[in-house]
Image (cartoon, rainbow, N blue to C red; front, side):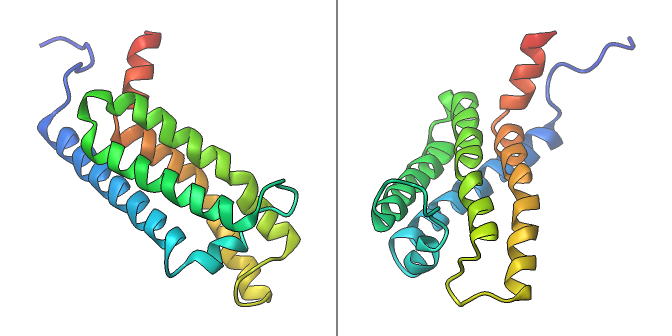
Length: 148
């Protein structure tokens, strides 16, 4: 036995990544469908007022992007590392909208202290979404291996 790190994934880590990737894909598809249907009005409140596009267009377009990304995560096994990076960048791209919603005080059901707390907590989870995309697709592992 050597002290070198294991370079091939263990069965448990591969299974964990696969489950994480499937859940990420389903999460994205579900959120995208929500953008186009029942949660459309709620998502409209998240569009920053400084964005120079029609609010409904932004919600519909981002819903279509989320569905596309979710299906890519689920189906494009050959390109999963690239898809992981694209999904992570998408999560970073929507982050300013989440920050704007907190500071502009827009919410579907009105504004109160509970809303502020929920929106603030949501901001804390955004980096976890980025990490989830990079980990579950193997993009982070690929980047680390490439650097060494």
